[in-house]
Amino acid sequence: QVHLVESGGGLVQAGGSLRLVCTASGSSLSAYVMAWFRQVPGKEREFVGGIWGEITDYADFVKGRCSVSLDSARKTLFLQLDSLKPEDTDVYYCATANPSYPPTVYRVASRYNNWGQGTQVTVSS
Image (cartoon, rainbow, N blue to C red; front, side, top):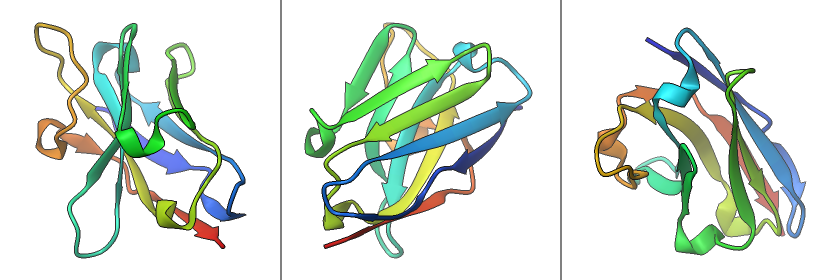
């Protein structure tokens, strides 16, 4: 079992950037599909971006201003968010899922069975 802890959230002005960090303990992260989701209270968790091996995938609302990367040696997953907008205000979560064939990054939260506690991102206008 992998224990995930997110950090790096905070308050930023619109147009600014943040780099969220997901640190893992336990198994190597390279064995899992990994993704970032976001959620506001009362709404479904929304896929932001993810990575599996050489494959990355991003939600349309962050394409061009978001990058997911994995440092396997440090067991750390990153989410770089640029050109932040007030509507990006959310709690951001990292998650792991067991891979399947053909290789894919799942966009559905129910495919992920291991979650961190989340980190708050607040973007002011």
